[in-house]
Amino acid sequence: MAMDTVAESERWQLAGLTLSSRLIVGTARYPSPQIMLDALRASGTELVTVALRRVSVGADSENLYRILKDHGYQILPNTAGCYTAEEAVRTARLAREAGIGDLVKLEVIGDQKTLFPDVPATIEAARILVREGFAVLPYINDDPIAAKQLEAIGCAAVMPLAAPIGSGLGIRNPYNIRIILEQSRVPVIVDAGVGTASDAAEAMELGCDAVLMNTAIAGAKDPILMAEAMRLGVEAGRKAFLAGRIPRKLYATASSPIEGLLS
Image 1: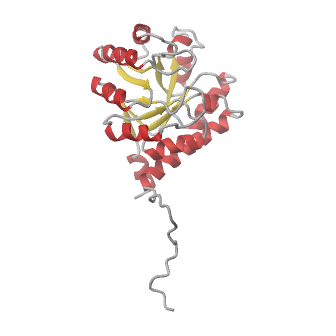
Image 2: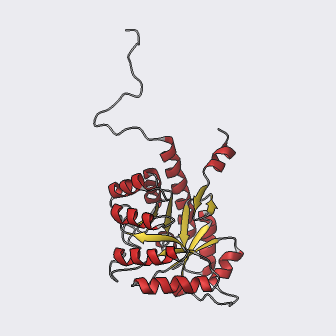
Image 3: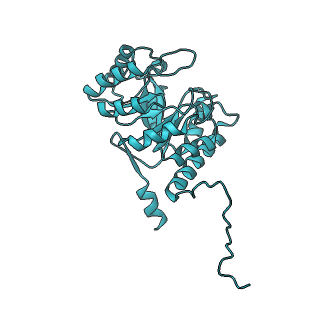
């Protein structure tokens, strides 16, 4: 198969968007706006997240949304910092009224120390937002039951965490992620806890549709170089998944068998 045909076939759908990159990147905590823009470019991302409660959505010429739009990025607003379903729903509604759109990453945090999601509140908010026409991408624990419930509600994807937000621990429970992948008919995006390129590759090797990250890039000593590494990690992991790895075995198998050779 020709390389351009492969690239064409690897485009994927998320809530009506057609994307080539499977890396979604956040826009917080960078040393400067220019480093953020340079890192986004190096990552190859097309879809970037912005916390609705942490930025202005007005007409200011320095508005982050306008800057990102001017650079050609699709914006995924998120409800980070919300601790109740009511807060999250209100924040999403305000974003839509400001013209940002119907796509939203839903975060309802249940604990300030761990930043784990409040799953019942997330389900409650998702039910309301889906009913109101939002394309909802919920941040959840690596919980197959919650993932199934949110898909049944009508969420456009499910986004299980790899580890706590900003921890850099990588995927702590690949087995639950595999169960979520087996049962899901919507995109599965690993969100939170990725620390380095091998973590991103592992998520993609499991069969995830994409990886979302912020701190792993923004907090690196060299965010731009780490962004490039994450891009390559996602690409390598995806290709490895498509290629199909060999089975794991307890004992060796000779790579150069001797059967049939003359003695």
